[in-house]
Length: 312
Length: 312
Image 1 (tube, rainbow over the protein chains, first blue to last red):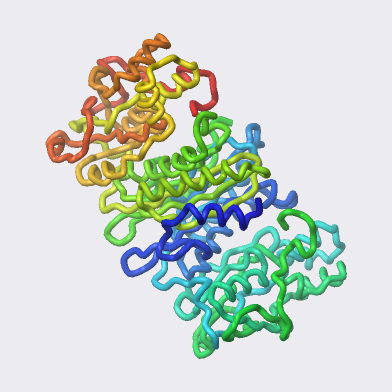
Image 2 (image 1 turned 90 degrees about the vertical axis):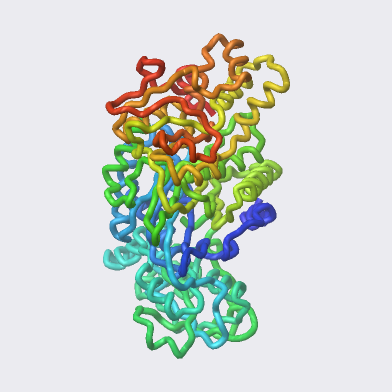
């Protein structure tokens, strides 16, 4: 069964949902005059942790991927929980690396661990859960015609780092460092999410690649999105990799997943009040679909480049 | 590594905890004038789901085991989340059974699903997460000398049902029905937990067996607990199984896990105001340790009866 079929099968039986229907970065419940946000994301070592990643980086990433979903809702993370599935005979040093990574991440994001659970399993699994709170919720369905489309930070380095590693590309040490930082040690945009909750109309974190996230915002908001390739914030290091493998840096940037940057839309009159580093890459119009430089944008993913089941 | 060593290793690195330290039925955070409670518990099919259990029962149980931890904190469940690990080629009917079970459980407990996540894994895994709220928190550490020790419902049927199934015991159909109801379709004591939050001093749900839970309350509260074997609420059907296998029904009741009854302590002067069905089984005194009929009580578990890794 495909993931979409599995999801459809479950949705048929899960009629009882929160104030916000399933399908956003996180779930949400009204509590008092604000929202409680909750999300969970399972990291399966076999498919989500490339060999080059240290256990400490894997532990940190299990926190980051959940905190990032909370940030994409405009919420402040307030707690983390995790369940471990551990294969029998797992190396103690490896396990301690994971513990250290989770510990460093909760310090970095300044959130407490509320609950933890360990179990024996065939795979090494870290199922992370993050909770957050916000007065105003950012969803994938709030984009409005007239909004500007923006993205935090830069995009493409996560996938370019993977490609450099996977194909053993010879790149300068400074390039490798810049790419691996994003590929192996991405960070969630927590401060940005909290600030954006005041002005943005919609947001999503880039976990499956910019082009797929643009399609989600377009579809869930019922709007047309137009972006310009020359506006995309792509760093020099991504160009180097693109050249080495004979691909376009724009394609790499559009397909690059697990960036954990925030893609958001904001009314143009509010753009000047944003106290966040961001780049305007396009605009929201009436209609449907996603366009780049006037042409329809295909929802690119890692599978555009490889036959592997998951990028990493 | 043993589970206790793994936990110790993680605790070394997880300095940042909530207002309630790790080690209770659930984590808790102060929000406004109340508490937000959060807990997670992973169900691994290979070790937690006996062959006789239907996928629908397994799905329901994944919700129950988490809701029960919320109830044990005296909190009202407000939401459920889950992550699935699914082996490639898993039977679609089996998967739909799990979906139906989770759907029925959230209807039964009247809580919304806030977030769900699916992944490929070697094991079939359901990692459930439940959230709850309460004005007053019940912990494992609140028992006070003078409290009465009480338990909801009856105990022993879960393990007796397992034994009847495991050893193919010939018991009357009505006995089997009463045992399997608790063994395969246990229910969390939600209403009871909410009512107890007003008067009880401590609570824990029976997931590892009454004797182990008594030891946890005793240790975490720093008190001595004395119970009487003749006061234990053990149903006739447990006696039948005990006789068939030549064991004591009291031993079965003390070792029976995944009962999801609530064990709690309450000041004797408040006992008359409890609007809950319960049985007084003993009292809390100054000192330490757990005693039954005046003798030290060993923390019995399934391993007392079998060499299997987990009971179910």
